Structure formats: C-alpha cells, structure tokens
Length: 351
Image (cartoon, rainbow, N blue to C red; front, side, top):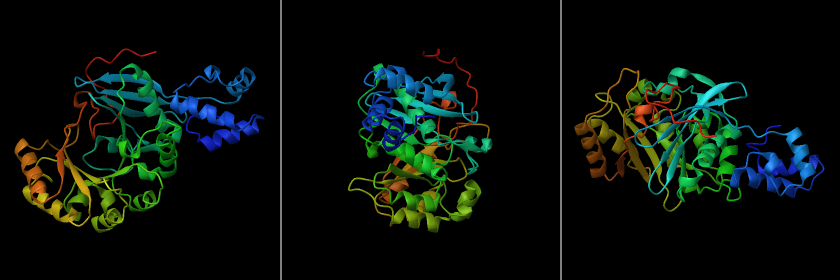
C-alpha cells in the first residue's frame, strides 16, 4: 500500500486495521509531511515492531529524478519519472531572496490543447495521484532544505489541467494546506485553470482552498476559440459568471493570466476589450506573460506592445503586472514544459 498522499484520517484507519492505536497514524502523517521523513524504518517515535510490520505492508514512493536542469537564473527544472503506470512529469523549483516558488504538475501531459502551449503537444497521458502531486513539493523542499527561506509558494501551473483531476488535486491540497501537514497558507498556493466552469464552481464551495487563477489569453470568444478550444465548451460569459460568484477573502484577488502572443492578442484594442471583460468582476488582477519561445508558430511580443497593453489596463483601473518567466533557457518557463531536453549541463544528482 502506498502511504504518500494518504490523509490523516486514512492513516489513522490503517493503523487501527494493523492493530495499533489510531494516534500512530498522526505520527506517520507528521513524519511524512511535516518532517519529510520518507523512510518508514527511521520514524523513531513508532515502536520497532510496528515499524517492521509497516515496512512489510506499506511503501512511500517518491518519483525518480531522471534529470535536473539548472537555469542561469537559478531555477531548477526537474524531470521526474513516475513508477506507477510509468510516465514522466516536470516540476520547477525557483529560489528567490525572500521565498521559493515551486511549480507543479497535476497530470502527465494535458488534454486541453491550448495552441500556444508545448505541453498540449503531449496529449493527456494520465492523471496524477495525490501522492505524486505532493511529491513534487516535498522532493525539492527536502533537497534544498539548507537554503530555504521561511516562505514557500506553490503554483499548480505545470503540466495538466488541475480541475480535470479534481479529487486527487484537492486530496493533495488538503494535506498541503493543513498546518499539521505540509502547512502552507492558502494565500501562498495558486491553482491555475484554463476555465473548467464546473470545477471552478465546485472549488468555490471548498472550506479551505488555494487561490484561483484563470488562464485567459484572449479578449473575445472568437479569439479564445482558436487559442483555447476549451472556450467552445465554456465560453467567456459562463467563465466570467463563475468568476463573478467565486468567494474571495478581504485581500484575495482572482488572477487572470494573459500570455501575450506577438501580433495575435497583444494589440491596444485587445487590452481595452480585456479591461471591459473584467470591469465588473470585483477584486481581480492581470498577470501579463510574454510568450516563451518553443517549437510552435508564434512569436514573442515587442517591448512596446507589452508596455502599451500594461498601461491601458492600469488606465482602466485593472491592476496589472508583467511577469517574465524564469527558467526559459532550460525549457522550464510557462508553456514550455513538454519533457524537452535542455542544452546546458544538468546538475549532479543529489543523493
């Protein structure tokens, strides 16, 4: 039985099945998620006899690090091999002066088929389990333990559409946001979706949930139908309606991500249309993301078009920020995760 990804309640029930008091499950839960101890034989507060029984009955399986690619900006792209139904996914660790951010995948590949995203070229391989999602956070944190700052941000923006793997994603989020588990604050975790309206509505009802980000990337239905075919199923009227009803705390915003494609969606009129779309949604902000180059037939926006787009949104009272992606040189940036090789020398394997 695989333990990574199991909730506290599941671990307590397991211990009772094995003839141990339920609180042993709490001890295992703390060891896995708070202490990042993945060797059951080394969980020293468990009786030796139970540790032996547990190691025969259960496992804790981390992905195999097939390769690490080190960017010139310090970001690390992990190429991870999954052992169950063998597949590969990617996670990115991005250290900064005051925090570290980890971008994680929720599916191997993706079925949404956004035309400007290289991950879409893979198609959907399979959903990830809650344990495989959590491992992408736990593994980099354990490897970089000596240099971590006090704040960790996690963004569900890697391979896959999180809301099409809802149960496993939320199983992982409950552990990630549990102060007795990994212990991140909801304000430091962001789930990015292409606009799966039923999933957004379901997420809105969760008592404890990550922040919401919407991958917008177009200023009209006609434009979005081409760039993001999911829009034909969930057009802007339905998507923005779901956002309008999404609950927000006193300082919480819905983030709209807008990938700027040179000569496609980056005109001044696009900016004005975006401002009109978002005008009555309450607390929102826009992250402008210049397209990151890959093997797709698009081009980067000019600095002038970026600055003009940004300025128009601000003039229309829409908070906007231009985000330049990290890890572009090792194919770790937004839209580049497609299991590609990278030209620079990889980091040595960390034991």
